[in-house]
Image (tube, rainbow, N blue to C red):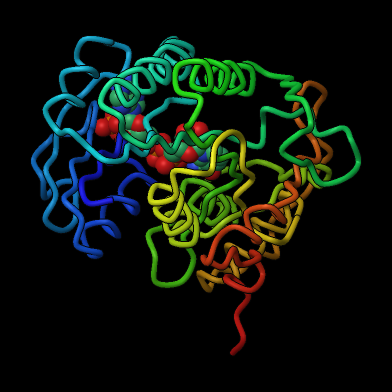
Length: 286
Ligand SMILES: NC(=O)c1ccc[n+]([C@@H]2O[C@H](COP(=O)([O-])OP(=O)(O)OC[C@H]3O[C@@H](n4cnc5c(N)ncnc54)[C@H](OP(=O)(O)O)[C@@H]3O)[C@@H](O)[C@H]2O)c1
């Protein structure tokens, strides 16, 4: 894999994927949408920035045709709002069709919230998706669209992405820190379980998969430790040296996916990249 296209490279995961790929000597093009395409604004390293709206099928095809990538990593999305459904579902279909048309390997980013989280055990790749809210439903539909357009694509289901020491902070860490400092007011759910994954670990795994065309369909790629949201928020504060004693927990309201812990044993067997548990990364040892 020498030429890589990363959609959503102005975002948290896409930026990390693009940067690592450049450092590994790949030729990288990364897309932004509302962010300025001035390279220094969002792409670190020697990568080419392109503005793209993935809802525009012709524009997606044009960019893929121009870049001629060996592999595409599709990170672009929005979670909420009027653009979410079209960006997630149609955008993913457009990217998959364009990747297939040029014979590029596709790594599609999906989510643990394609599941309801009510099985009471870690979720495996062959468990049927059962989304309970609109974002999860859109991600589940995107998986179907991508698999139909490009059966060789790998569908990477992941969980809360965080940075930790030495990395940029994710929105999840920033929120926990803001609440602990009294800048925001909210409770963290004590019954909502996820397997947070460090952004560098996930980016490395994604790049490994981009170079492994034999792996297709859903693959669970997340941290090896399942924690509730309050525990995650406390760990994020601890790592940042912020007093977390003011954080409070509460049960989640109905209609949210609860225990979406992912069984990552297939990814661990397939990949060289370690998938560290959140405590291992965030817990302060001194
Ligand atoms: N973050 C998590 O905790 C998490 C958990 C599970 C799964 N995931 C999955 O991981 C992937 C990446 O997440 P992330 O948190 O890194 O995302 P992010 O930081 O929110 O970045 C989203 C990216 O998508 C771009 N984008 C938005 N609308 C677009 C459009 N219409 N056309 C083209 N690009 C568009 C944004 O561009 P601009 O900023 O330039 O507008 C940005 O580069 C997503 O597929 C997400 O579902 C993330």
